[in-house]
Amino acid sequence: MIFLRSAIIARNAAPTFPQALEFLSENLTMTADLRLTALAQWLTPFVPHYGLDLSTLAPASNDASFRRYFRLSAAQRGSLIVMDAPPAHEDCRPFVQVAALFAQAGVSVPQVLEQDLAQGFLLLTDLGHHTYLDQLNADTAPTLYGDALNALIRIQSISKPGVLPIYDRALLARELQLFPDWYLGKQMQATLSDTEQQQLQQVFDTLLTNNLAQPQVYVHRDYHSRNLMVQEGAANPGILDFQDAVHGPITYDLLSLLRDAYIEWPEEQVLDWVIRYWEKARKAGLPVAADASDFYRDFEWMGLQRFLKVLGIFARLYHRDGKARYLDDLPRVLRYTRHVAARYSAFTPLLKLLDRLENKAVTTGYTF
Image 1: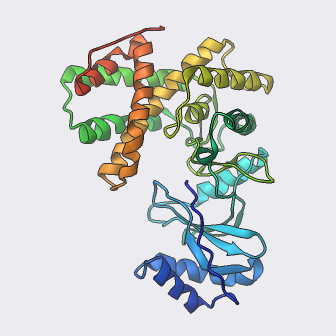
Image 2 (image 1 turned 180 degrees about the vertical axis):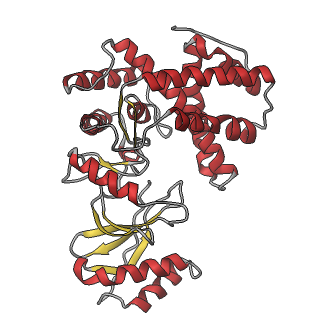
């Protein structure tokens, strides 16, 4: 999520419920939004306890799902976040479960203060305005990524089977299918030959075999710079958007962090951070590969699964949901995809397919 600066409206007294609705109608231009009406009504009983000022309720994030987030002033805590997750499309229960689970690991996550699972409303503590993406640069990156690696290891260290859904073959395969369905089919308007379809499926099977053979731990699934918050006076990072957490491959979250769809680092820097994680993870007793080169290969192969998935998701967000801003990040993810496909001979058919669609000559530089 990307938190925006809230517009704080000065009032002499907390507004009544009708005044709050009037404010929302005038300032958020959502007069027909019945969920906002229900949200304001749900919040009203909590006004005295938290010192809420409903007149300050304003959009607080830009999300890729049906969830919406609002920030409002709270005299007792400075500000709080309200999640609106329509039950027809979203389920708040995984968020509540994973928030409690990750808190047990000693990392910073929003505390659920109030909840109404039937309506899909949560009142949460506010982890601040500044994402990692906002703050990352050459000077801040070593500390911020060091903190993120430490938090990731704490989460992985409490992993137990049977607690979170399994990141199984079916789910991984459904994610891969987003690539031909949405990126190739919709974004590139491509038609694959029978041979290309068979070769692409072989690439998928190769990836899935590797992904599923990796040690299994808790996986956030979107552990990247837009979901990590830089906090003042609290442990970094503040971790958001974890409701889709699963039990799956150990390299997945590390990959999401270091091969981020929204910010790119030189490979030598990424390799340095991967090795630092690998060393810390071994000391923590996590089941990483005994050889660092094997671990890095697993990291890259997990990456290719995620890159193909993200290419499909970004194309879907544009073609189905009208969210064009994600198209700006497609070239970066495509560079990641080509980087891995060119490095390993198992993925040559994928590289040839991309070359054909983009009218490029085939170039390879195999490592394995």
